[in-house]
Length: 151
Image (cartoon, rainbow, N blue to C red; front, side):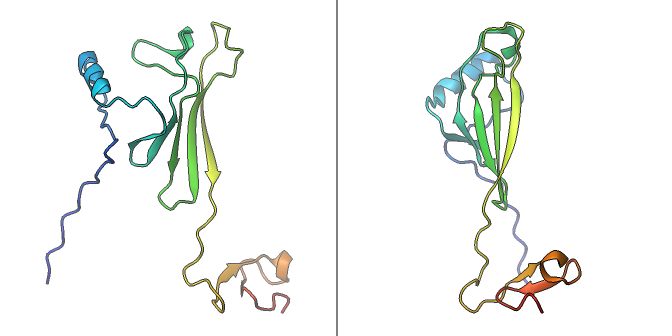
């Protein structure tokens, strides 16, 4: 019998820049120059795509000693089974002038259409779940597409 293969480490896309939790400022600056991407969209890690870099806001609530929260920064990520896309963004819900305003971090789930079922074509049988309201049958009863649902 064959020996099982060792799992492979996932390979990041070429434009992907690994980012550790903390790095010295000089190293961060050097990495930024080396991997300079001035335009979105670009992939940063495992399917996360930066679609907008946003605008840096000078108000105190939009930065601190270690973080900057650019208004309009936006990323998109699609889950593994491609049923939903998650959009993360930093927004300013104020008027843009109040020094006390703080960023709003928003995550929105967008459901994606399901891919066609394998083998779904003329004459294919697909089991679907229907409710008692539709058929008069008990909840959870199933029917075949194209069959007589009233039976």
